[in-house]
Length: 303
Image (cartoon, rainbow, N blue to C red; front, side, top):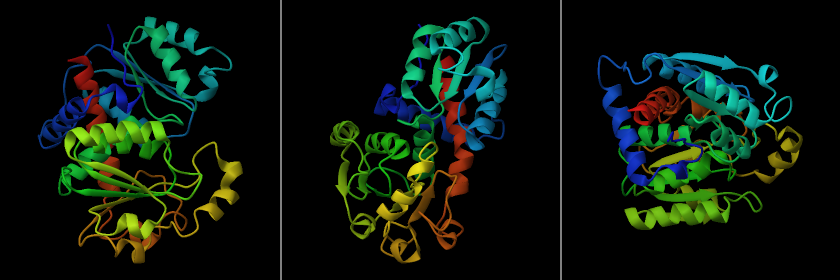
């Protein structure tokens, strides 16, 4: 039976640690290639624009001995020109792996149910599990996870949904500061809290960015207006006034705290150039670690 990763919840805390351990080990080796996908084909179906996700997944498949094929939105018409069931059924006959970047999380569920091959969520409006794996890897490299504090300032979106659950299982103390109406949903908070209780971590929802960042070891933010929310841009800019990660806010964190952003960034909105390009920023490490985390995940799935 093929195993898919559609949500970070599809991986236990122990499995997340195993994948991240594998990524760390492989990254430290001179030879980073493997053979888990030798003779196989990985199909990338993307409904949204992508730089880091597409390049890193194509490289990950290639580095593991496979061949990567990319299909753009007009070529597939997922959920429009063709149903997810038809796309999954056909793709599963041709390919050994499907990597899908989509708007609707249910597209992933339907692809996985019909394809008969592993399906990996490369971002949906609901979750971004591969980004969370890369984020945990990055935090591990910059001081470790257990017992440390992660402050997320911004929208309770797909990125923090996956991140909170993954980091909670690593024993981190997570503080999420969002304005009213933009908080992380209760179901995700409950799952993150459940994992935190088992690992010695904690999860707190706050409204004050300064309170969230005070003494934190990691300061994380993301765009206030995600792809598909462009019509809400003006409303969101007003709602998130005071939530910008700037030098003054970062100064409230612990000395030497890491600053993270999954990119792309709306410079001058959720984060300033000074901070994003500053000495505490680890955003390029994060971007690089997308490759290592995803390659480790694929190798783990196909071992």
